[in-house]
Image (cartoon, rainbow, N blue to C red):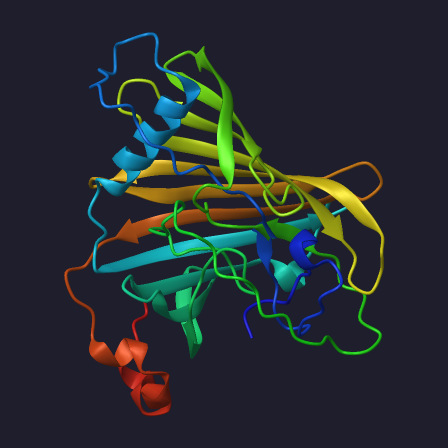
Length: 289
């Protein structure tokens, strides 16, 4: 399989199959309502809440393409050394209506190997994505399963997609050409761990989210502070994931990076890409780039 499970702070004692890995951390942003007046981007007296809701409205003003194809490179390091078992590159062909994706490994610049059907998302036992994921969509709750006995696999946190009404904007400041907003949870601080988000001061496009979480060792009560940074960029009028970095310290040195490249938005993809039952007979037709 493509990755191994990680247990999250939202469910630190939850175990999961050793062949999956999960990136998560709970972070949510408030669903706020603008006052009735129209606020121009140049008006300096915008409140933190108004900036936050403008960012959400701007984010959702962009159409979601029906299909997206992209490459994700995952790199993991522990104590400064690369974890080769959990460092890999995937090429994915995705249908955005349900995030169903045909996935193949890329090695030595070539797409090869078996075909897999994945549903990348946040707060799940799989790599985060797809690149067009709605970061303001309420997260689905995880469904943990039991891990093999004797396993002691470190987690990499539990980043969640942004849920509504779980956060309020505390304060905002201008940093160069952007607003940096500090947020706090309205409820459930152990799950909702977002601390800051960065929004373009002119366009109100979302640029970055920073969330804090805990890294737990599976089968142990031991945990370490962890920080996740999610960077976004615009491509062909769509906000997409660009890079995710997670890292710990204070007694356990672990880092994970996801980099999203080679992103295209084809108008159509073959229907069989999303029918895993047919993969065995379709290998000769499988995409290789």
